[in-house]
Image 1 (cartoon, rainbow, N blue to C red):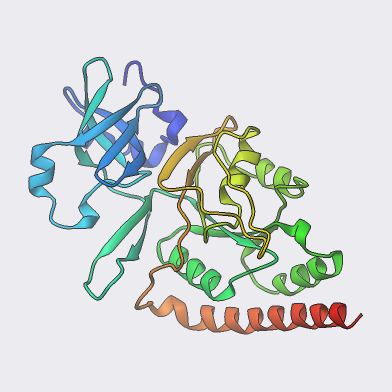
Image 2: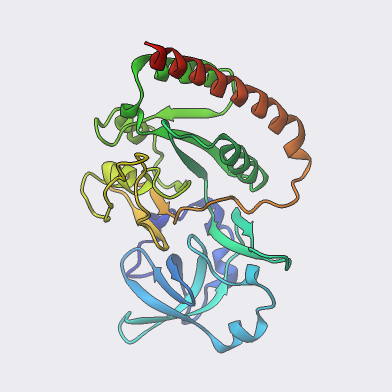
Length: 298
């Protein structure tokens, strides 16, 4: 791995235990940093380059799950002084996040691979609890640790925020409350990020995923559109999945907003977990509704 730095991309014991089986001769290890339809970008920690699939890879691939997605570790052959890479194989995945493709046909759309934590971002003012429930189930089924982030807490009154925190404290998942405007809670999140671990930002369009990523980076590296006045929601900005390395050593993958999680048939993990969650979230909604009703009455 001369002239490469895979540790920057999250290379650790898990991938080290298997890369010798796939990396030999002219092949080297890289991680997929971006997928845009049928084009790829890969990085070895020093060089980032566009990539194409080899002819043999295309011939052997039988389904969508066989193709690379963002976060995958791949065996590449770098050409023309790292101006192009040929992807020859995808290394076995530690985790894979996928969703059912729209329509009636049975198939899956790959979201991200080799993720340690899924950060589900919700607007504190306009939470979608049913979607949140499905995201948590999808992450648990994929072996990914879910962390729920309620963003835009500056849009809630202190009373509303306290009620939300109190009700959510009854549930076992980790919840964080942040504001990209006041930067409240951003430092708590930043201080708890683990070096070498990969985090994925998930959630609907306009909930502030990209703004949160900019806050963590400390610069406006990624474009963010203005918030709509009529509903306080941001406009869709992220159009493709991409992997970003933070100075702290953690790795982030930003994803486009999804209207639903694409879950069709859920396994047994759904039952008790989901039922308890639904009951708890109904209490949250009722509590916030009572507060808002009192505010209007005043």
